[in-house]
Image (cartoon, rainbow over all chains, first blue to last red; front, side, top):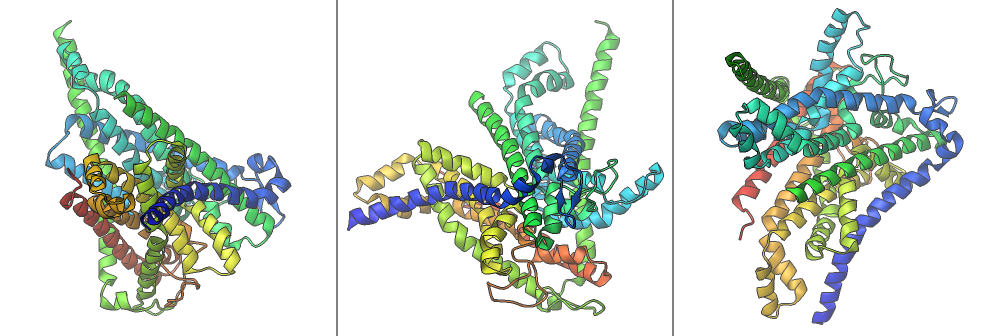
Length: 291
Length: 282
């Protein structure tokens, strides 16, 4: 009797564990099978085709690939000075104390706000601001567009890169820093020449995790990017990302080819984010072994 | 080295610190702005009627969000039912069998699942359930959210149980307690607060998720308790009303945003309190 419950329990553990692997495999296989019609019809043209026209049945995803790349990298670029400052401030200048924990909690709260609310706020507060900026610059004042999406995204990814970078920066051995101080280095020089080089792979991993997050972010981007299925002309023009085109068009897609093209975009998105995340996690793991 | 060079370096040092502090303050500015804006816009529309009434059509003031509240709760319950047991078991597996091929694969899968964009999970739930059943449903939305909860639960369970010292397990086994009872009655209860924290965090994470629900739960203006029918949820309602052109619906969406933010932040705080108060320590 005892032995039986025992083996049932162990079986249950194994089953639950195996379920994780099966789930992931099933996700990939499902996406692959369902994007086959589009792969057959469009082939590699899917990746470099510029026209996305459901009516005539031409599906080239280049505008969305470009939209995703532009918004994500622009977002990282904007957020980098901020997240790095937070990381240096909390990891080096002010490791403990009330203000430090207040700031840390605030950043964590930033990560907890649902993305649809970022989008809503962006649509009603940020987009008018950007429209004003565009009028000053003399470009067509859409307001919505790649730039708006990047700004919202940059706010959303700050917590991700900042928290990892803070951790690695606070792990920099004190004797390295003290050696530099004893040679007469100022704090800026210690941070710039000792701390940052030492923590660089961890900081890079944090940026990769933030990138993984930015690539797949859907709602906030969908609400402020303007949903235009053309190649973006500038960073102010309306566009679409891979995630936002799925969000916008999936329920309209009734024909097999249309649906399958959207699924293929989803598959691409999954593959890219997976690669980015795995590289990021790999770097983190190597770093923690080193430290 | 001249004195001027040193002064220059010191000035640089101070100005660097200044820049760092300013950038830090600037980066929490959006948080403050968002929270203030939501409170300002949202709090005026939140009252008892707002929480208990159904949304009204355009042109009629004074609608509520009761259907979205019920829908969100229903979706969270479905998501928990299908992810919590499996997630805890898989977490126990990982903490028990740390090395080994399956453990490695499971860890990798969980990491990949955690990084999977939520919209992709939505596609999956659509292809698996909505197409088969033939209609959008709360059930498919709950499954999608459940898949999103899984990685968090597995990871927190594993990390918590790893902290539990071996001698606790050995003491139990030495008393002749069978293995499965040792796990279920000694190890899991010892790490319960960590596991609960993980569940709370994952619920906070999915409570605001919209993307996987767009083509699974779909949204609905009516009250609905049938899990095989389309259902509304707070984030869906916010999305649909925020992108509509009507001012009444916008104010409804601000109110709903306020409720959602309060709910999510309260869950996060509660999770942190649980983690701190009943810390797993030996």
